[in-house]
Length: 163
Image (cartoon, rainbow, N blue to C red; front, side, top):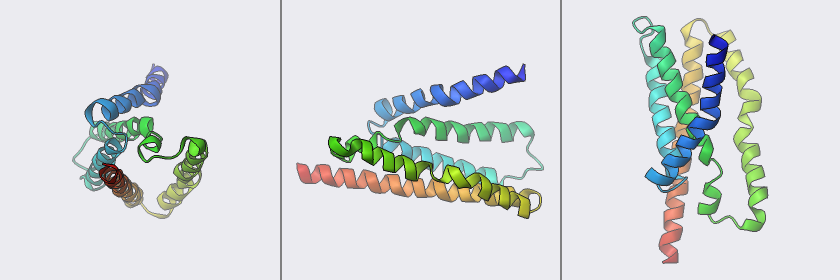
Protein backbone atom coordinates (compact mmCIF):
# COMPACT_ATOMS: atom_id res chain seq x y z
CA UNK A 1 0.00 0.00 0.00
CA UNK A 2 2.74 2.48 0.93
CA UNK A 3 4.49 1.87 -2.40
CA UNK A 4 1.41 3.21 -4.18
CA UNK A 5 1.45 6.29 -1.96
CA UNK A 6 5.10 6.89 -2.87
CA UNK A 7 4.15 6.71 -6.55
CA UNK A 8 1.28 9.15 -6.05
CA UNK A 9 3.58 11.50 -4.15
CA UNK A 10 6.12 11.36 -7.01
CA UNK A 11 3.49 12.05 -9.67
CA UNK A 12 2.10 14.98 -7.70
CA UNK A 13 5.61 16.43 -7.26
CA UNK A 14 6.73 15.90 -10.84
CA UNK A 15 3.60 16.96 -12.68
CA UNK A 16 0.90 18.37 -10.43
CA UNK A 17 3.03 20.91 -8.61
CA UNK A 18 4.64 22.07 -11.85
CA UNK A 19 1.17 22.82 -13.20
CA UNK A 20 0.37 24.71 -10.00
CA UNK A 21 3.59 26.69 -10.36
CA UNK A 22 2.84 27.54 -13.97
CA UNK A 23 -0.69 28.65 -13.13
CA UNK A 24 0.45 30.76 -10.18
CA UNK A 25 3.19 32.33 -12.28
CA UNK A 26 0.84 33.19 -15.15
CA UNK A 27 -2.45 34.00 -13.46
CA UNK A 28 -1.52 35.37 -10.04
CA UNK A 29 1.93 36.92 -10.41
CA UNK A 30 1.85 37.59 -14.19
CA UNK A 31 5.59 36.95 -14.34
CA UNK A 32 7.84 33.89 -14.15
CA UNK A 33 10.45 35.91 -12.24
CA UNK A 34 8.11 37.17 -9.52
CA UNK A 35 6.75 33.76 -8.59
CA UNK A 36 10.11 32.15 -7.69
CA UNK A 37 10.93 35.13 -5.47
CA UNK A 38 7.80 34.42 -3.41
CA UNK A 39 8.47 30.67 -3.54
CA UNK A 40 12.04 31.07 -2.31
CA UNK A 41 10.90 33.46 0.41
CA UNK A 42 8.26 31.01 1.66
CA UNK A 43 10.79 28.18 1.47
CA UNK A 44 13.36 30.17 3.48
CA UNK A 45 10.84 31.06 6.19
CA UNK A 46 9.57 27.48 6.46
CA UNK A 47 13.14 26.12 6.52
CA UNK A 48 14.09 28.51 9.32
CA UNK A 49 11.05 27.40 11.32
CA UNK A 50 11.76 23.74 10.54
CA UNK A 51 15.43 24.07 11.53
CA UNK A 52 14.79 25.57 14.92
CA UNK A 53 11.45 24.06 15.93
CA UNK A 54 11.45 22.15 19.24
CA UNK A 55 11.50 18.58 17.95
CA UNK A 56 10.70 17.09 21.32
CA UNK A 57 7.25 18.69 21.41
CA UNK A 58 6.25 18.22 17.76
CA UNK A 59 5.11 14.91 16.42
CA UNK A 60 6.24 13.15 13.29
CA UNK A 61 3.23 14.47 11.38
CA UNK A 62 4.33 18.08 11.90
CA UNK A 63 7.69 17.20 10.37
CA UNK A 64 6.03 15.41 7.45
CA UNK A 65 3.67 18.31 6.74
CA UNK A 66 6.48 20.88 6.91
CA UNK A 67 8.67 18.71 4.63
CA UNK A 68 5.81 18.45 2.14
CA UNK A 69 5.29 22.23 2.24
CA UNK A 70 8.98 22.81 1.42
CA UNK A 71 8.79 20.22 -1.34
CA UNK A 72 5.63 21.82 -2.75
CA UNK A 73 7.33 25.23 -2.97
CA UNK A 74 10.45 23.85 -4.64
CA UNK A 75 8.67 21.59 -7.13
CA UNK A 76 6.13 24.24 -8.10
CA UNK A 77 8.98 26.64 -8.90
CA UNK A 78 10.59 24.10 -11.23
CA UNK A 79 7.86 24.82 -13.77
CA UNK A 80 9.15 28.33 -14.35
CA UNK A 81 12.92 27.90 -14.02
CA UNK A 82 13.57 28.74 -17.67
CA UNK A 83 10.62 31.03 -18.37
CA UNK A 84 12.53 34.21 -17.43
CA UNK A 85 14.66 33.77 -20.58
CA UNK A 86 11.95 35.57 -22.50
CA UNK A 87 11.53 38.27 -19.85
CA UNK A 88 15.23 39.13 -19.78
CA UNK A 89 15.27 39.42 -23.58
CA UNK A 90 17.72 36.63 -24.34
CA UNK A 91 17.95 36.58 -28.16
CA UNK A 92 16.12 33.61 -29.66
CA UNK A 93 19.26 32.58 -31.56
CA UNK A 94 21.09 31.79 -28.33
CA UNK A 95 18.21 30.72 -26.09
CA UNK A 96 19.20 27.04 -26.34
CA UNK A 97 22.79 27.80 -25.37
CA UNK A 98 21.64 30.06 -22.54
CA UNK A 99 19.32 27.35 -21.21
CA UNK A 100 22.15 24.81 -21.45
CA UNK A 101 24.44 27.01 -19.37
CA UNK A 102 21.61 27.77 -16.92
CA UNK A 103 20.90 24.04 -16.58
CA UNK A 104 24.56 23.27 -16.00
CA UNK A 105 24.87 25.92 -13.30
CA UNK A 106 21.44 25.32 -11.81
CA UNK A 107 21.70 21.55 -11.54
CA UNK A 108 25.42 21.40 -10.67
CA UNK A 109 24.81 21.38 -6.91
CA UNK A 110 22.80 18.18 -7.37
CA UNK A 111 26.04 16.42 -8.31
CA UNK A 112 27.78 17.08 -5.01
CA UNK A 113 25.30 18.33 -2.39
CA UNK A 114 24.25 14.81 -1.36
CA UNK A 115 27.88 14.03 -0.54
CA UNK A 116 28.24 17.35 1.32
CA UNK A 117 25.04 16.78 3.29
CA UNK A 118 26.07 13.19 4.03
CA UNK A 119 29.44 14.37 5.30
CA UNK A 120 27.77 16.96 7.53
CA UNK A 121 25.36 14.37 8.95
CA UNK A 122 28.18 11.88 9.52
CA UNK A 123 30.39 14.38 11.33
CA UNK A 124 27.75 15.93 13.61
CA UNK A 125 25.76 14.13 16.25
CA UNK A 126 22.00 13.95 16.55
CA UNK A 127 20.00 16.95 15.47
CA UNK A 128 23.04 19.24 15.02
CA UNK A 129 23.84 17.83 11.58
CA UNK A 130 20.27 18.30 10.38
CA UNK A 131 20.23 21.87 11.65
CA UNK A 132 23.38 22.60 9.65
CA UNK A 133 21.93 20.98 6.51
CA UNK A 134 18.67 22.94 6.79
CA UNK A 135 20.63 26.13 7.47
CA UNK A 136 22.60 25.58 4.25
CA UNK A 137 19.31 25.06 2.40
CA UNK A 138 17.99 28.28 3.96
CA UNK A 139 21.04 30.18 2.72
CA UNK A 140 20.41 28.88 -0.81
CA UNK A 141 16.74 29.88 -0.58
CA UNK A 142 17.75 33.38 0.53
CA UNK A 143 20.18 33.56 -2.40
CA UNK A 144 17.23 32.60 -4.62
CA UNK A 145 15.20 35.48 -3.18
CA UNK A 146 18.06 37.92 -3.79
CA UNK A 147 18.75 36.74 -7.34
CA UNK A 148 15.10 36.71 -8.38
CA UNK A 149 14.65 40.17 -6.83
CA UNK A 150 17.67 41.42 -8.79
CA UNK A 151 16.34 39.96 -12.05
CA UNK A 152 12.87 41.42 -11.40
CA UNK A 153 14.35 44.88 -10.81
CA UNK A 154 16.52 44.61 -13.94
CA UNK A 155 13.46 43.67 -16.01
CA UNK A 156 11.47 46.57 -14.54
CA UNK A 157 14.34 49.00 -15.27
CA UNK A 158 14.68 47.73 -18.85
CA UNK A 159 10.95 48.15 -19.46
CA UNK A 160 11.04 51.64 -17.95
CA UNK A 161 13.90 52.62 -20.29
CA UNK A 162 12.08 51.16 -23.29
CA UNK A 163 9.07 53.39 -22.66
